[in-house]
Image (cartoon, rainbow, N blue to C red; front, side, top):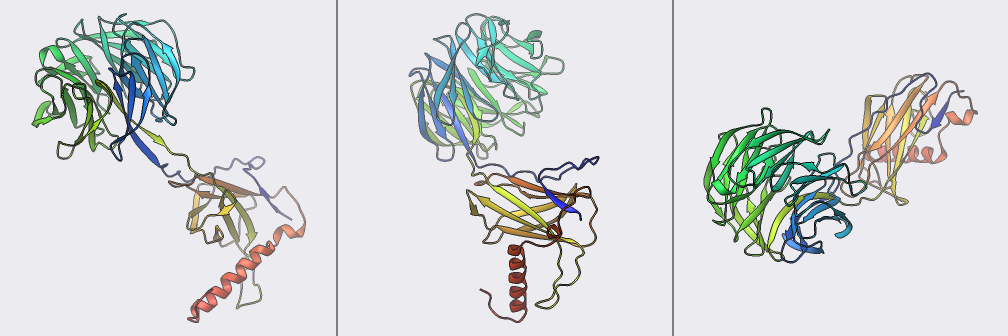
Length: 464
């Protein structure tokens, strides 16, 4: 007798690829972190309500802030205490303080989340933090005079460091952590942002009232865009089509079309002395830290108008946006495979060709109804079914089945529940008693229940 062997099996001499459904996106929350230079704290804004949900004490004179790609940590450069505060974004508490160079101003995190690059304005270098251990690794990287901001390319291979006092940008190879190019820009550059495709870096030149556009392939300036009197912060939309630039002197934000590298539309009035700018992951809103009015302006990027102003701490200068996943309830999926008993009429059983796959989905011991279960074998989709009130889903597979095969049931997960999967494999090398071919009594009950329901439905009678 052949038997069904439960478990994630790899049959002897047979590698079986298991088709797995892609898990659904977790429930997410998007939050804006604004550094309050004057009150040594960080304000946490829930972007769903545009209200401050937490205020986190950090070091002395917090300036810039960056959030890890998974949204779990925020790194805050404390200008006056020469260190970086690491915030756990789940609890909004500081879990580590990392000493760096003199007067750290800018901070950026690699796309893989493993390192944070910190621009130390007072010591003319960049510190690299290992985000796993929250310790500085290697020697400081010497750059230009007065490094103020840093941005990292989407592929993580280079860091662009803006040197405020030497009017240039240092390009760091993040593999070797050495400077591979120096790009002259305008007077007193302050901010930098890189397009999502990594081909352009936009640098705000505060002293010359312009934005320098750097071609990251050649590391040369290919355009200079006049933007006002005193541009500081710059952020680029996720689709790469626009750059939002905060003008500190004129208290407004200008929008650059990155295709033509020209300013479009009218300046957008915001609070007093805007500094950094950040844009939500969906590109619908821009958040601007207004140092002079102790607020964060929220711009609707469709209409380019301010929709609200959020009061925060004293002298907000830095701003960053991150998305973190909420905890979901774990689920358990079980799978049984039985020979397919084809019922004739309302009683006797017919032939046994094919199999019936029966899955049950539970969470914390309770059945989950209304969830879609996908049944697959190897790389082939068989069918899908929605769990009933008992958390059960069924897939009937007709025809003679291979002597060695694995079946998988998968729940892709949703906003509330985590994904889960179960696999059962059949091996011709295993022998067992005859009962392995027979259905479980509870499955027989289910089959009888289904038959009765189908019969009553076809007769126009209500079910129970």
